Amino acid sequence: LHDLDAAAASQSFKLPDLKYDFGALEPAISAQIMEIHYTKHHQTYVTNLNATLEQYAEAEHKGDVAKMIALQGAIKFNGGGHVNHTLFWENLSPNGGGEPTGAIGDAITKKWGSFDAFKKDMSATTAAVQGSGWGWLAFDPKAKDIKIVTCANQDPCSTTGCVPLLGIDVWEHAYYLDYKNVRPDYLNAIWSVVNWETVGARFDAAK
Image (cartoon, rainbow, N blue to C red; front, top):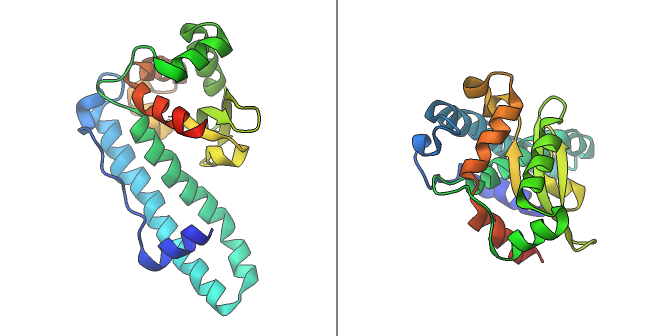
């Protein structure tokens, strides 16, 4: 929370720049969904995070512990929303798709036997998230291995004790305009725009 407190004073949390146009991920993700998701949903998390951190800093200054405790849920939700979506945009690329190479590709094959088996497992596990949440390919530093984990709402992957490598947003706002209520179709399509270069770099840094 110390980093968040410092950011509150400087208002340093901002919407990250996208490295591609809203329509660049079509047909997997439409320009309409990308624009709404990025400019409305992600922006709201950033705005609310900064506002909540201002309240937290004020409460801390006053020694109002009850208020500080009461704000933890909003910090977790909006901070998680910002962290998760920042990673999500980096996970995607108009030049993405295909199969991962290098160390992450080897680790996936070792763990699941094949890339297709991994995709099937991750898609099924993520599709099964109840309500809103995220599916993650993560690195478990204790086990020194990769694994699939899910998180409810905007809880960040770090709350599981793991390092996030690849996250898939399964809040309905991420896919409903394109895929209605058929979450598995969205999950099948998103593999065509996964940026394995970024995922691989995260894996190399986490090991």
